[in-house]
Image 1 (cartoon, rainbow, N blue to C red):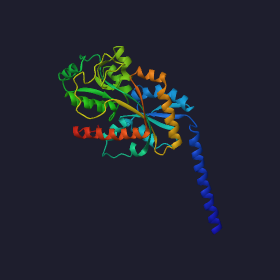
Image 2 (cartoon, helix red, strand yellow):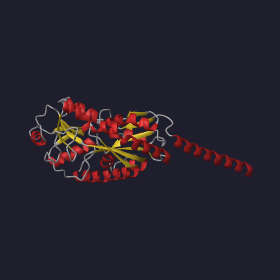
Image 3 (cartoon, rainbow, N blue to C red):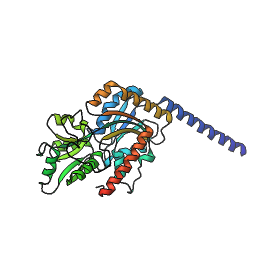
Image 4 (cartoon, helix red, strand yellow):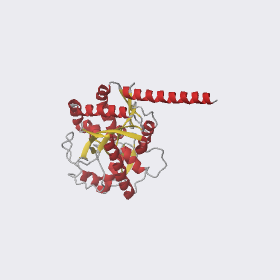
Length: 331
């Protein structure tokens, strides 16, 4: 019996060692198949736009196809939970933005099985981009002051569109409302692209959304941009004033720009993280990509995984403070 037990133990130990060796070899050889880059919103929004700008360059850097997969719904939680429960082998990644922290602030204390700080490995921060206050051409306002004045003449309250509950466009507009004293009803969509489309169609009068997602529509006259959230004017919309120039005095200590980062399921092997980190550095340093992004007012901005995680922690804390002070509730 002792010999059988010993043989069983040795077999199990050998199997465990072989499995560990196999995992290390797979990590060293990464990627072994196409990499899925998950986006939590429908095509046409800020995060999707950036994903499509970098996917081909990332393919060249990794030596494997990068497939963009849109998984909209539940304010981002469908995609976020999917990535969190995926195998931590680097073949399923998330391109996320501030909404990852904003939603945690908004739903803090609510029943949830998702926590990006405990269920994700932060790989690298990759870019920042301003938002713009956008209105339908049918709205008789060409400045922020005119928009605020007009909103007070509307029976009931005006509506504003967002990419979803807890999205960047949702809470950024709540900051804007608080700063200018406007009353407006939130209309959430499944992504920035869908929200923008309904503002173009005149179904909803206004939104705050990405510059890159609306630049062409503003230039063609299908939308009007009244202000941008960056400290300086956007090179993509140089005629549009900043919020500060438009007289908006922000009352909350929060970030109104988009920031974007790459995350993976908790437990990514170090060789995989190193390969991804090196590939992203190479992609973001490429002059051709930087020029393409500059035309959309997206600034390549590399940061390490540890810096990205710290940014997410700060985002959750700062937005939690604003949400609590203003009594904002998830619809």
